[in-house]
Every structure is written in structure tokens, then in C-alpha cells.
Image (cartoon, rainbow, N blue to C red):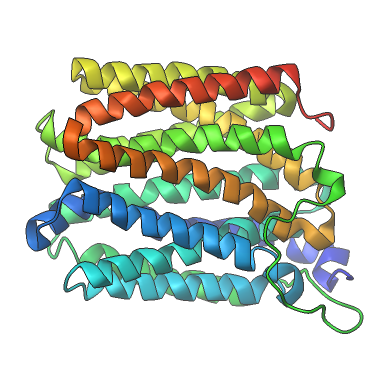
Length: 401
């Protein structure tokens, strides 16, 4: 594989990685857009908290399936075609929600959103890194992870605000997202393509969990740290909206969206901190801070305290951001160019398993224990998990960092 003219002439593509990060954020925004709206869907359609769990579960299945089946497609087809496919799937998901008439379209929309997120996670990250000049690779890594977490956080913030203060609460958020996707598609068409093949194009086939030999020394610790951090995102996304509404009586959708946004915003701040402490220490310190955040989230459920929940979200988000960026930096730096997209996708497979299991567990337990007690059980389990991962990373840090 050879690089494009854009790769050989950095000045022509210097703005490219920032534009790619913007496309990444818009795509990920759609995956969390419904988060504050599930209460409205429950009132309209009539279903239990377990169904909310099932809706999220099919999203996670979509993400992991796309990562396993198509995680390396951008290394063969090129970055732009896969990015356009991901944005197209996101648009179809928005249309399902826009014309929602019951649970079947909700499920379909979430599956399509999962496919989109799965394609975007590896491909958009690789695109941002590919388009960065050699001297700005570290900054591009921050841009990629910030776009991922920032997009996930902006989804609930945008939909919560529009649903609370604008007309058509279940339609307008998706209309706005469709407009943003149209802009993102236009930008994607203008991005330089960084993947070229000098001879016949390699065969297109599912690659599963691709971890090249060059990455095997750094992958286990990095992926486990990502798994631990994403478990907090899953726990918080599952518990916070229902806990705020049912236990604290906070039914303002804009406030619910802002609370969820707080976690993802803190994650971005944690990614900034990683640049100061270094990737090796950030893996260990990120897990430690994450444990503190999880303990505070559990305490907030016990005390039914919104301020403690916010502090826990901010603390845990910082820890998750530190560990996530450190792990992604280690994996993407060690991955060979020809397998970068597939390797990053494998990293995200582990992360998204972490984000999905707590949601499914909380939903199942909430049916018998209630949201509050179910959240406390999983907070305790997550503390044990993250502590174990932190001890492993401390004792056996990635050699390449």
C-alpha cells in the first residue's frame, strides 16, 4: 500500500485531521441522541425498563458486529467510502426514530446506529491519525478521542435541550441531526484519501479481532483499561436518566441531558491530562481515578444525592478519559499502517463489550430491585473490575509506552 499525494504533501492536508474529527463527532452524536428521550417513548408506547435495556442491547450488538465484520474494511476500500457508509447508516437510524411507530422501528434504529458507530470507531480514528502531519500525531490522537467522547456527550445535551424547550420533542432532534449529517457527508467527500494500493486490491473479507504481532505486547493492558472505563459509561448511561426521573424527581430533559454530558465532557478533560502525565502513568492513574468516581456514583445512589452523582460523573469521566486515550495511543502507535483500521476496531470491540454489559445487567436487575438498587449492585461490581484492571496495568504496563 502506498500513501496518497496528501500524505506526501502535508501542507495540502494539514486541516484534514480536524475536519475528520468533526465528522467523527457528528456521527457519534447520533448514537446517544435518544438517551434523554426514552422516558417519552415509554409514555407513548408503554414498555418497561427491561425493554429500554433491550433497545440498548441491540445497539451494542450492532456495534460489535460491525467492528468484527467490517473493522478492517477501510484498510482495503479506503477511509472515505467506509466513512460515507457509516454516515448513511446514521441517517437511516435517524429516519427510523423520526417516523417511529412502535418498538420495531426503535429496535431497527438502534441496530443501524450500532452499525454506524462500529464503522466509525475504527475508521474515523484511523482517518484522523492518517491525515495528521508527523509532528502533530499526538494532537491528532487527542482530536480523535475527544471527537469520540465529545460526540457521545453532545447527543444527550442536544436532544434533551430540544425536547424540553422546542416543539416536536421526539422529531426535532433527529431532523437537526440529519442536517448535521448532510454537512458531515459533504466534508467527507472533500477529505483526502490516505489508502492506496499499488497492485490489485486485497480481497474484502471479515477479519474478526485483528491484533498484529507488533501490537500484542501493548494490546491486553490497553484494551482492559478501555473495557474498565467504558463500563462506567455504560453504567452511567443506563442508570442516570431513570434515577434522576424516578428517584430525584428531576424530569427536565435538558437537565438530564446535561448530567450525561458532564460525564463525557470530563472524559475529554481526562484525555487532556494524559498528555501531561504520559501514556504509561495515565493507564494506572486513570484506573485509580475511575475507582474513586465509581465509588461516588454508588454513594450518590445510596444517598439519593444529585451533587454527589455529578461529582462522581466528573471524577469517573476524568479517569476514563485518561485510561482510554492512553490505551488508544499505545495501540494505534504500535499498529502497522496497513492494519491500523482493523487493529483500532479490535480495541473498540473490547471497549464496547464494556459499555454494553452494565446496561443489560442494570436493566435486568431493575425489574426486581428497582433502578437505584440495581445501579448500586453494578457500581460495586464495576469498582472490583476497575481495581483489578488497575493492579494488572500497574504490575505489567505496556512495554512500548
